[in-house]
Amino acid sequence: MISTRVSELFGLEYPILQGGMAWVADAQLASAVSMAGGLGIISAMNLDAEYLRGQIRQYRETTDKIFGVNIMLMSPHAEACSQVVAEEKVPVVTTGAGLPGRFIPMWLEAGVKVVPVVPSVAIARRVAREGACAVIAEGCEAGGHIGDLTTLTLVPQIVDAVDIPVIAAGGIADGRGVASVLMLGAEGVQCGTRFIAAQECSVPPAFKEKIVSARDIDTMVTGRRLGHPVRALKNSYMLEFAKRERDSSISNEELEKFGTGALYRAAREGDMETGCIMVGQSAAMVKETLPARDIIVGMFDQAEQLLRKTGRWVS
Ligand code: TUI
Image 1 (cartoon, rainbow, N blue to C red):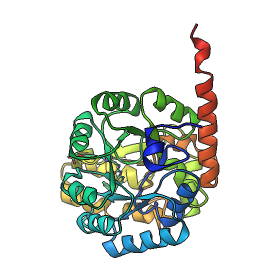
Image 2: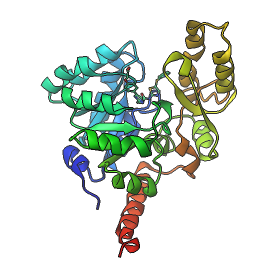
Image 3: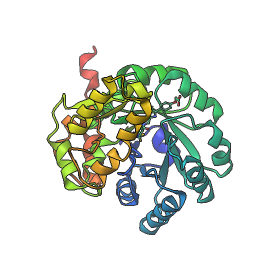
């Protein structure tokens, strides 16, 4: 058994969070992860507050295990969804793609534990000061919207900078990843890509097949020109985006417009060519679709075995 401040803080059997992936992380996936002993996260999906409220209620009909909601701060519905999180007294909120400071007092007042995703030391320090109870240090191996630093360099620096527990994300898909980030000082992991391939995840089968067949060099990053780089699988959509990004006659507004709806096309409609298949570099390490429970138990069994053997190099 691996116990850390993260498992204690949330009362988990395993210190693992499921990423709050837009258009992917619904109540069904979150409840499968939480029932398996991790922390399931429902994404507000870029949809309105009432959709989120419905998902929270659907989750609560399935299980009374602890769960979280992810607020994507670039969403036009971020404010309204943040209010729903407080009103529904959601146990945990994770945030991404921005600074959550303006919402933190309201969440703390409602008893919600705040766990922001942070891409740098300065942002980790800032949210710790503002009342976060843990941070998710996400390296650029991750899928979707990413920062500049790798997990290997980001995690130990954030561990040194803040006193609250650090959860590592980006590139972690098996027990070796779990064991490694514990060595860096993290006390938990967040996995996104591995859980997209969970049996309980409702993305179209074609999306899961893309993950299972991905090779090491199959992801790429676009969107740096717009200030929000995004990692996804290389396909016609991503190559076309990269081409337009290099073309100075195309305005940023036109480029943004080209990106609108692309994740939805991949994750909900199964369009693997004109959709944006947001996955991390760890896609290449995902070999099969499994129930969430088998994913979690397998990862932590492997991590435990590895950690027990670490003494063998030291005399
Ligand atoms: O948020 C994510 N991953 C995401 S959000 C998303 S939806 C989207 N679609 C198209 C374009 C952009 C986004 C898909 N994937 N991960 C957490 C994360 N947060 N990664 C990086 C950050 C982050 C970045 C900057 C957190 C704070 C931050 O603050 C700096 C600032 O200036 O806002």
